[in-house]
Image (cartoon, rainbow, N blue to C red; front, side, top):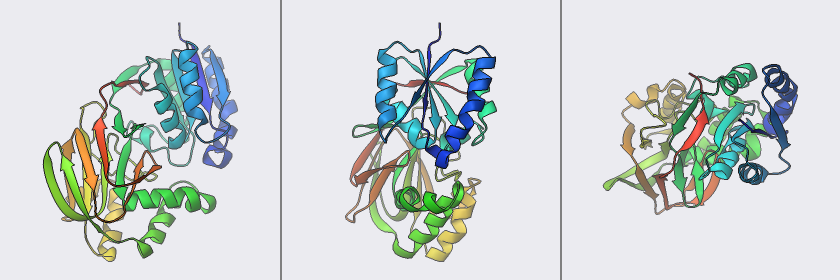
Length: 294
C-alpha cells in the first residue's frame, strides 16, 4: 500500500506554491490518493523531512516547490527505497522540463502521481551532495547565485535568470579550465562548463539537449571563450538547444568529470552554490525511483 508524504515549500515561487496547494489537495483527494502534508520551515528542512518520511515508512515522497526544494528532497531520499515524485510550483522548475512537465501545471503533475508510473534514473554526486539535474562551474553558477540573491526579488520566473545573465556579463570573463572526462584531458578557456544529467537549467535553458537521465553518463557542455557580444548571440539559442552548433561550444559525454582552474570559479549543483573549484562529479552507484510521465 502506498503511503505518501507531500513536502511543501510554502514560500517557493514567491508564495505561488502555497496558493496552488488547495488545487493539488482537491485533485489528489478526488482521486482517493491518501497523503500526509509536511511544510518546510527553513532552508534545508526538506532534507530532514524526506529522511524522516523514509524512516517513518512512507513509500513515496512528493516534493512540491521549485528545483531547490526538489534537490533537498532528493538528498533526503538518496540511498533509500522511497519513490520520488514532484509537483513543479517554484520559479525555475527545470528538472520537469526534461519530461515535458510544464512549470506550474499542477493538474499534469498530479496526474503523474495518480498514474504511479515509476522509472529508475541516475543521480549525480559531488563531494557530499547528490544532484538530479545539472551541475557545473563558471558563468552559469555565478548567474544562478545572482538569480537567487537578487534576480528573484525583482523578476518573475525565467526573467530573473535573464536579468542576472545581463548583470553578470558586466563583471564575468572566460577562465582557463582543466577538464577531466573519464581520463580524457581537455584544457580550454571557457565561460562555463555544465555537467548535465537532465537537459534544462537557468529557467528553461536547454543546456544539454541530448542528455538522458538513465544512460549512466553526463552530457557535458563547454561554452568556450568568445566575445561578450558573441556570447549574447549564443545564449538565446540555448533555450532551444541550438547553441550546440556554435563553433565555441563543445559537447562531451562521461561518467566522471573533474573541473579545476587556476582562477577562482564558483560551482553549483541543481542551483545550489557549493564553493569553488576544483570539484569532481560522478554518476552515483545507486539510482533513484521517480514518478514520471508515460
